[in-house]
Image 1 (cartoon, helix red, strand yellow):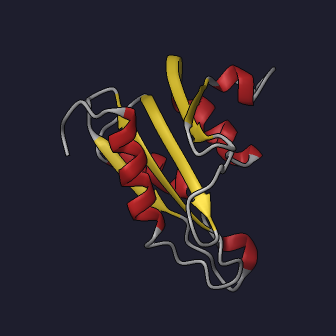
Image 2 (tube, rainbow, N blue to C red; image 1 turned 90 degrees about the horizontal axis):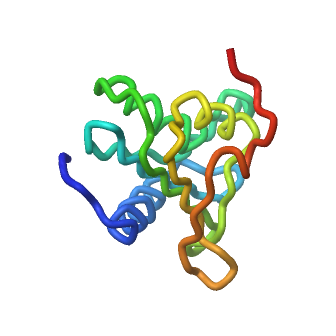
Length: 133
């Protein structure tokens, strides 16, 4: 997909891909949609594995899809999770570091707040004093 997407469009895409998650152990489904520096959209969901540490987060999978397609920087990432319906789903520490790796100064991380509205964050808010080479 190549386009300039609205935040709400990205939320809808993330929520749709969330429904494809493979989460038979936690039943917690997560979807992520990334708009990259080339205005390409990349989506992914979480994929659990019976060997629990081998599962992968939606954010990590979406970043991998972006990199595989030639994207270099995240402009916007929308993350949504939930058991039965969409709810706030802040990224785990590992995914915060992954996002940081591909974040620019203007990267926006969009999460649902308690009222179900999108709330923008930057990586410095979510990962202060982060590790960077």
